[in-house]
Length: 216
Length: 216
Image 1 (cartoon, rainbow over the protein chains, first blue to last red):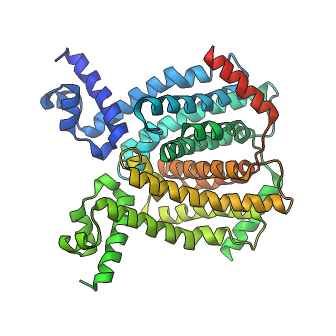
Image 2: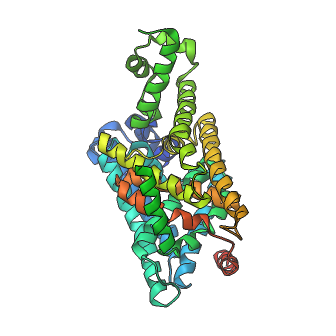
């Protein structure tokens, strides 16, 4: 058994791994302690509950994803729209590597937890929401820069950023469901086109017509 | 306690509701039997396990979704691309109604289950995959028809159909995470633009360049 500070870190790492592999409800505090080599009494020194540990694990996982993938993908060494393309490319590459090592594309740690617990646990839902907001921020800044340098016009960066988060989450869920990182790579290539989607007048007219028909 | 045939149907309905609200691992066979008013011995007359019941519930839920939403949305009373717009509009409207009645946007019954259990339970994963494939089929046929009548050109209907399934699942997951059906409605309006996305040569060049840089 290591130092106290290590015990907390080991619990966080174990929770991140175990919850991702088995779901939040598929793992108990006892199992997490056993895996981390931490006594149950020590667990409650660091966390009030399994929920508290799961939230800490989400913070840690977001920090790692941000440092290892998000920040490098959005680095300004390439034009802003290429950063978005590169991000989707790297998400698929990470899933490909994951499948090679574990046999299974796991999808999104954050999205999976919202899908399992989002309607039952407001704190977990809010944490995942804050991660989605942070990712949307990266997309939005890249789109704003693309507009500023003249690579893009006629778009709403905030709205398209949310669409890209939705598409990213959908790609990760399809990757998990089909266990197919190549599908993720192909779908990711359409992200830049979604990023560039503008307000089409004809489409708005269609929306109005469809609403009218749906209500009639 | 009703007739035997009712008992099975009540178990399936209870499982669909309970698993959607609490997750697959958040509900036990005992609770499902109690909710359905069925004795545990009878449960095993109909199903070998909780998994068997969950699979039957997924079949039933897909049948209901198909009859109540998917088939009507893709009806040929409007041009093919409008059917896709209408489908996304109605998915958001259904989530809006759900929030009004339960307080919470629940997202996708199928996607949620894949996100929780997909990497642990091959049968559940395969069932969700078959539902996604069925939905992709509706998109693909609409896109093929749009090409046939000249509303669309230069697209790969099968590839764009998969992109639309991903986008739909992402919208449902964001709707659940943000508990916001209006966001779903706004995001859904971009679906037709994604449906029309073609093969952009410049983008392929970017992909190659990004791959080269990622490997360097």
